[in-house]
Length: 370
Image: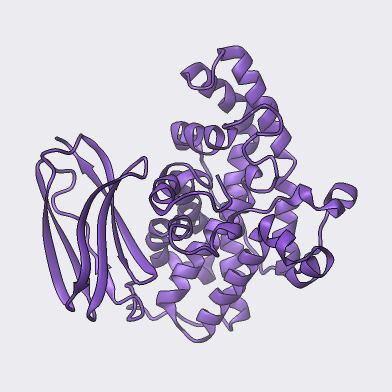
């Protein structure tokens, strides 16, 4: 579920349904980060909804940004140093010096993407750019979560080398979606991170051993159920993996909080404006409202706002990533625009409304009841 093998449409669907703990998992991890906010971070409580709503933005960007894909994984066991010593060069420059840029990018740059996003977040804090800061924090949460997902840290990312093909999505999405209500986390004490680089690599090294644990659980569940798609299989996989999967989720949420806190401390602990409410800034130049009504039958009203004249692509996708409607495709004047979407020929189900202008996007979840 990584590498650059999928089309834009396919990636949109996979971003919502399959990749990187799935959208539900990322939503949960980013939301739960607020449970560890200490007294100093009480001002960040207003961020929680935005952190959750934008938790999967990084996955969606794969649809049009060819540089995004390698940021979500690292095939760490393709590094000889890791096999022999349990660690790899921990700066991107040193990794490239040892192995070459082609090798490094082909095997993924997840830890360095995480560190770059941390630096961007800190820079936003320093210049009091709160609208961008919260989006970088949401992206940071996504990469941190990927770093706690065992199959984003191995060459055997889909079980293809051990006869477990398909385990990536069975574990991170099918199982997680079924048991997400059992992921309980009360938060934990946080502190400033002394060495952010080492911190990121430490949780990667700690998460990697669970690759074999999930493979063993998959083998057990398949033997018990005789298949990989029944409730018996899913329950058996959960029983064998929940003991470490729940802590992985909690650790990811806690790590996100500590990284946000550290970036804020290192930036001088600036105060957020008491009136701050997240909204896309002028660089994004648009906003997409939730359709009304939602859920709905037959028709719904879609409204979006442009801060300047823009090329607009407004589409609807189903959960499999298939485009079911293109509502707007062309140059639109600045201002408010509304669209009445008729769904007489659309089946009941969940759909995603995607608004894209330039390299920026927003999305809303819609429920059709036809």
